[in-house]
Image (cartoon, rainbow over all chains, first blue to last red; front, side, top):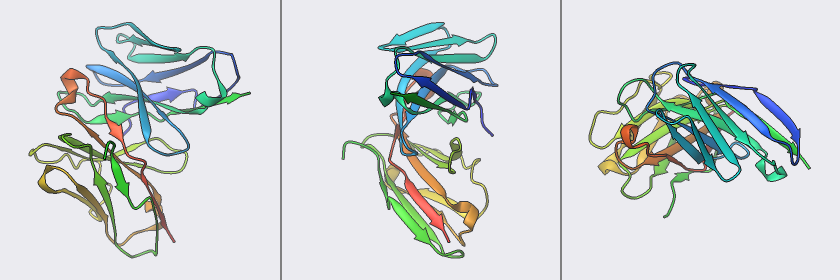
Length: 112
Length: 117
């Protein structure tokens, strides 16, 4: 079963706009990660936020985490056509395990 | 190599045949994962190896699926008597050590596209 659920499933924006994707999860977590996937190939790690952090930045990426609501958001500012990809959140399944479970993903299309 | 390597990149097989997919993780990584992704879908966890511990096979969809990891390195995912619903991208990933507490990220290969006709 999927631990995370992202919304929206698909998002289309114009270049220069901001894109916000949300992720909800079910069990307690130690950290939450966001990954990017181009054209159905391998995923690339973007950013990790720990359960004791509320916000984290990396370049044009901003991630927030609300453990009380079991949700996270990924914000991409000043989007570019090259940001077009699928974005997934991932969490470790409940308990002390290294098993990483991915959400259903958000397909982002940035129109030039 | 520097990254996770998977082979074959693409495989077309006839229904009922067996297939083997190979994964070479990053050298030194003790954790290895297999995921499956159907077209336009999210990643489905299949199996997880951690060092010499017994693998977590809880995601394998049926007994037609099995995986081995020899010498703590290379892994092979075997699908017996393939069915059309097995068509998907099979993604392998590896990570160093126990990532849960340290927050290790995992590194993916480019995947093996399997098409069952």
